[in-house]
Image (cartoon, rainbow over all chains, first blue to last red; front, side, top):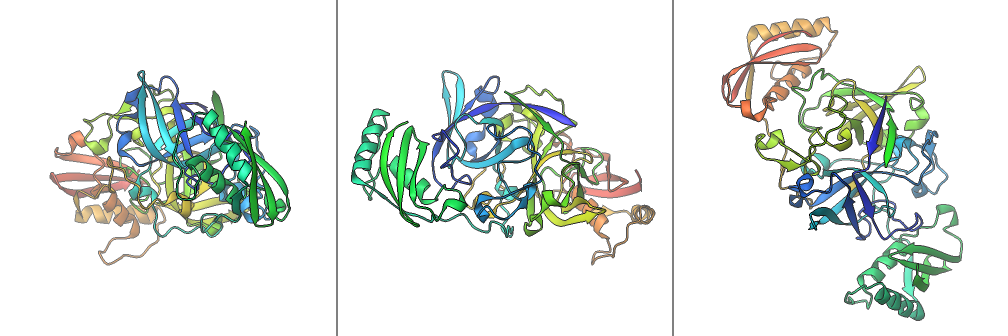
Length: 243
Length: 243
């Protein structure tokens, strides 16, 4: 049996490319916006949702091949050298390309009669088509004794990250140009810079490259961010420019 | 944008009709079976899943209208007289008819080279098309401080249920005929009879009928089960026959 699904909303996120996206929702409090599409962009369709703290986004991994037929995948989490069934992981190469992300609902906003959602902890590529939105149900979704021996705990940040002085100056100039207004916190970084630090600390490089030195770059928050691996566990952010 | 999804598995459950199905997965430990369809019925596609205690089933509410266009619903949970946005509830009338159930994985079984899953806590109609299966990730899916003020707690059983003597005899004869083999527990009921009791206790009647007396019936476990409302909170199971 086949079913045709249509897009009910589009995710607007700071992630312009797959590289650098955390490998699960909720790991870094990155903000995103869910733009509802007609006819679902009316306040009536979201009436009550403001009483809910977290929501499930059902989405399509739209940049993946439309007909994946492999039965197993090599999850990056396991170093890329162990095969697991597609149904035993949440890898993005999967039958029907159907993904699920759990994000925090920050606000339900009505603007000129249309609705959008402000969320945080998002791990979706900008432009991702959303096919359903569902409230988190703590009594049904929070299973205290659940076990997943493949991924027992959140991936911990593995890299120490510093900012080179000129990179921080360049980043701040770009953020001003992008209209970002925000205070500095105790470590002298603004919210966006802190989140860049967290994204790099999670080490987005594929596992087989994680012992390599070299320079890497990702496009996020409207910035091109570059970093240099100084040692296998020390990354130094070396540049930021407008993406 | 539209996307075509194909069925990867079929749910085999004791529920032959919508009436009587618990209004969320996990409420009654009803057993079900997930029959994988080709090409996903090979052990490779599920390799590793035995390390996971709970799984998400993404499915299609296939008996609902294929083009629901209402923006809000009247959830039975709220007495059927309050409208909420389709995205604020998990009601089955929803855009794209996409549903999600969290069930306990009891076993991954290989038979003659093909795979099926044994699960419990299932709330799906028999024959429901499954479009994806994903492992539960405790670190990402279990949100300790999540709030849903619309449905803060599991629906509690609201009816006291007893079995009339002849109904119990008839039920036991039917179960023998269906090949059911199982011991009796402390209350003198077998597992299936206990689950029938739990299903009736959750009061499957629509909210507007919950003050009414009368006789009701549901088809479950291959049985037609009938009960009489003796008082508004007391149900008496009066008959069981082969469905």
